[in-house]
Image (cartoon, rainbow, N blue to C red):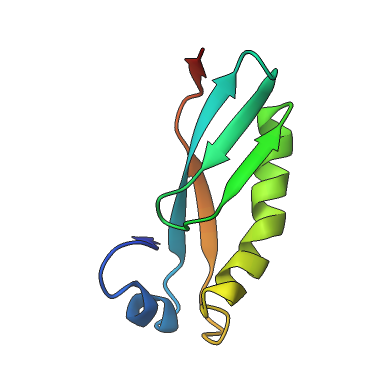
Length: 90
């Protein structure tokens, strides 16, 4: 897999190699939710009560976000989500 934010990612994606979208997950104690963001896909911000719910929400959002960033015109672009360990924040 090749990371979405790296150089030549569109070219690699056109070759059919899956692209990796890394999502950083933190737990917001005050709100009681997990918050996920990604440097690879600016604008991706997801809140969910559980990590499983977050995975589903991110996977549901990826196609629309990739289309908005003009990635959808390349039919062979795929994306997978990798999560870091949840980090507690105040």
